[in-house]
Image (cartoon, rainbow, N blue to C red; front, side, top):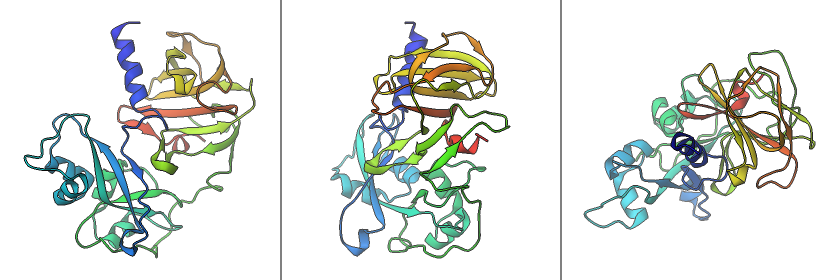
Length: 291
């Protein structure tokens, strides 16, 4: 395996769904005190060049809280790969009708700060049931936002009971079935960087758009048989837990082409497809792109 290919696999693994411990994922704080009921702890990874100041700005928490939560002592030296507890992160569960604007107003923070800490883009939407990190400041420590101000886009059906199929759009659905795990924060501090669709073993898996196969193999154990397709719009789609792979690295594929069959390879017990869409900035919510 050449060096570039090896680097690509390592990068994909580091950002993989529900398997990487390096993701900035929340760890539930089970304290019963009233002050902490709307809070969750997060464990973050220190990156090269990080300082307490840069982390406090990025995570929206005071430097003093980072020092206190991690029992740091002068000179507060940090090393790449260190794990730090972010203990004063408010978690807000989006209610029907919420917008980022009214949530920001309620917690006395800026919309841009909420977008930054949650890695949201300007065209991203929020939906009922989503969990949003709220940047900490001295004015919102005991605040709880309850009443939305206006209506936003609603999901078409219940969060954990979405039946999918092939409709006309830029992309096509990779497989027909029911979504059993959604994009975003999950229980126990995990995160899904894609969606998981339940389907029968042997069901065809389709390329969502034309592109080139940049990986087809099973070297990432958690994903089992895996295909990565690089598309012409600088996005990459991933298809995991496959049974049979019908393509090889370097092959060009067309939109709607059968590239594999559904399976249960990797660390899953039931037949399903784990599906992701990524760009240069990381994972994207597939439901915002699929018809």
